[in-house]
Amino acid sequence: MTQTLLVTSTGESTGKTAITLALGLLGRERGLDVGYMKPKGTRLQSNVGKTLDLDPMLARELLDLDAEMHQMEPIVYSPTFVRGAIRGQQDPDELADTVREQYDALADGRDLMLVEGGGTHTTGGIVDLTDPQIADLLDAEVLLVTEYTEPTDLDALLAAADDIGDRLGGVLFNRVADAAYDELENDVVPFLEARGVPVVGVIPRVQELAGVTVADLAAELGAEIVTDVPTDAFVERFLVGAMGGDEALRYFRRTKNAAVITGGDRAEIHTAALEAPGVKCLLLTGAHQPPSAVVGKAEQKGVPVLLVSGDTLSVVERCEEVVHSGRTRDERTVGRMRDLLFEHADADSLVGSGPEPERDDSA
Image (cartoon, one colour):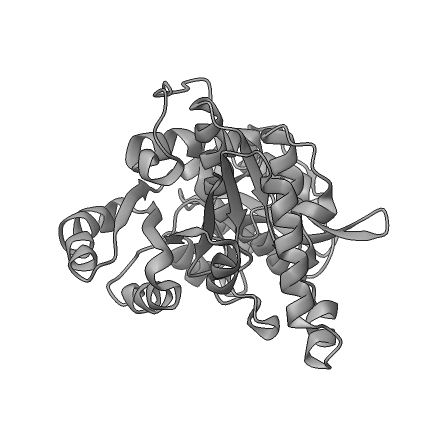
């Protein structure tokens, strides 16, 4: 009989894809025949005239699957689809039948089926296909992925757990910062388990999974790198330099692992940013070449300078998309998550017990 696990989350960009595929790797290492499905495609791009979700494409590669994309992703949950559903152009019962039909085909002969939710656990409500509803449809156990920074985050978690009900197999906290780790372990986990909400793991925050390297950011943005310095530093946040030089310096010094985005003609902002140790690169907009003195100082400080087309606001939006949409997910990311799950989560409760895999230090 096929075991089915649906991986959902309380919010966007919680690491759901990396966790789902890492569980697939752990399952395969335990000798299980693993399948994958994402009923609602939400991470979309156009590919040869079709709108496809990138996550099933990565799953097919990493888990060595031969399923067709329309099977793995039967519903393209695009803005056009949602508008059509609002206008009555989609039949929820027919959609549910399609999901079930494709699931049955994919699950045939499998030991473990991993079903990735779309967006958050409530995505799909317009057509009666939220993740809890899909779990009921497919008779799946549910893993709820969430993050934790402060106690009020538990409100959303408990509401999601209530929506999922008895199908909740456990909660997995991901990307937990050092500052919150002890509170989570000592206070939050016992509180949740006393409320009947099982916690199956607490994954610490790892920098390489929380940000993007300057090199990857430059590649995603199509930026020109005008300095000859290493580009392997990680960027996790973006600051807009739109104030005076002295104020900017105070602002920049309060942050870390940041990229400063400002116009290429704002030399005083460039200079202030290069004085702040937490600034890992400069992103200069507006097609302005920076002064040679700025480039020289940047190279002296080891800070890459990137030239990006477009205005500052549009560049900020593109940068945030790169970091928060998970577009940098790849085999290395999934391999790293596999190790984190092995070390910090109860893998047996998620994918079943079997021959114990060894830690993969090559990931």
